Amino acid sequence: MIPSDDNHKILSEENRRAIDALLEAGLVDGDDLVQKHNESAESTRQAAALSLLRKLEAYPVSEPDTLLLDSTMARIAREERAKQDRMEIHTPSWGKRTQWADFGAVAAVALLATGVGWPIAQRMRAAALEQNCANNLRTVGSSIAAYAVDHRGNLPATASLGGLFESPAASKLDWSNYEHSGHLLLLERNGYARHDSLHCPACTAGSACGTFSFRVPSVNTPFRLELMGRTPLVADANPVIHMRRIGNKSELSAPNTQCSMNHQQRGQNVLFADVSIIWLVTPLINGDNIYLPDGVQDSQSLPLSPQATTVNDIFLAQ
Amino acid sequence: MNNDTTISFVEIEGEETSDESLMIAHLAGDGRAFPLLVERYRTDLHRYLQRFLGSASAADDVFQETFLQIYLSASTFDVTRTLRPWLYTIASNKARDWYRHQKRRVALSLDKPMGHGENEFTLLDVVASKNKQPGDSMSALEESSCVKKVVDALPELHREILLMAYFQRFSYQQIADMLSIPLGTVKSRLHSAVALFADGWAQTTHETSKDHS
Image (cartoon, rainbow over all chains, first blue to last red; front, side, top):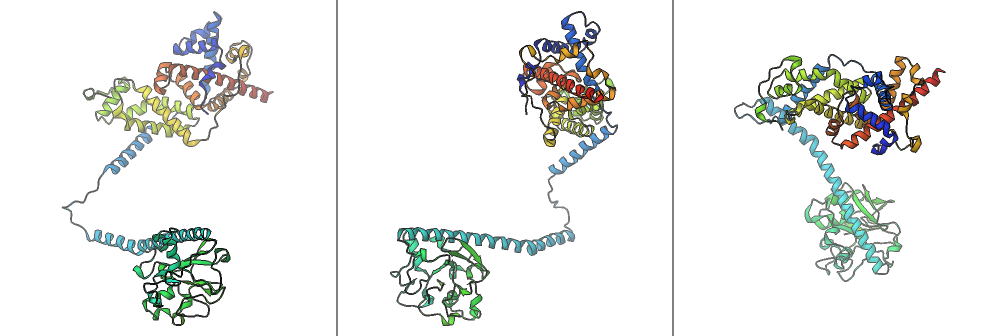
């Protein structure tokens, strides 16, 4: 606590004057005052004050170490050296021949940076992209919820955009023509979501991936938000359909374990109907592959029309 | 700021050379000057710091810090002024920094009323009375211990000003200049310091005499 300067009130006016007189006299006259303190009340008071102050001299102090001078000068010298080091600018000497050892050291550092630093940087970048993807999915989830509120609980589903899926040639029901889920595009076209939020930023394979796959409505079941419970609604792009589109059948040898291409098949972000987002390292939820309709094991047997087969089937298709 | 023309060769003649001349010599590049200055204040400043900080080892540290600061800031010293107040100002600042880092002390509350009106504090009167005081029966060792206890318990600002005024014999005006506070504040702070010391002394000696009995 910083003491209040009002504390001088705790001394009487006479005592304050006595202290002031002593200090102003440099405490020199105090000796005389002590000798003749009976002469006046004022001098008695000053003598008493001096007597009190002299008790301070009983404060125990030890003689400083004789090495204090040396240690002080040594400390100053250390600081001087440190200061010079800080100020010194290391510039390459053009006249000095570069040693092979210098090259070796530089090469070793470069190798170390490449061998250790690069993978770390890559992992950090991948983690950041996964987070950005999850953020986009969260935006999509909010957009879907807003859409449902405005449409009596119905989820975005369109037949006018070429059936369940947007297709440049709607009449040609072929997987290779499906560019994006028409459901999600409906959000964009009606102002519920921006186009850039409908994409995963982690995709490095150009236009071949980077989209999201939306839930395919089950046959003869209302497509309403409140009926979804806590089930997946949207996820990173369906790898099975992606492979089908680009015509690469050989990569689908084990479709049940294929993760989305968006994150180089390390896993996928999945948006649930309660707008929670989970990173899954396999496409399986309770044994059901979210990227395949029930009864389908690989891309070869995908139905021509992408449609969920049963009421409880969770099928996210691009 | 110092004038370059004043920084010239200074003949160092041991004790007779003033502090300011030593600083001028140091600024002129005389390597003997600064160690002489350090040695000159070794005892006086170290004792001041011991009383201020309550510890000899802390005083060692702050002493070194002080002279390091003096060394680094020597070029800013106005050689037309006296060095001693500047030195003690830096030492006090360093000591306060040390306290801030330590944070070991609990500030003494001064909110407690110590006397009003007719009962206005009269500890000096008590000391002045001819009656035998509790402290009178103490041994030198006990007295030393009590004084340390009381001084160490003083709030930092009060302890500083009391030590500056009593031991270093700085005038009110010098203290005001050193601490950059008004003269009236110096006085009131010193009055408080004396009263707190008197109060602490009375309490401590009273406890000691009770222990004896």
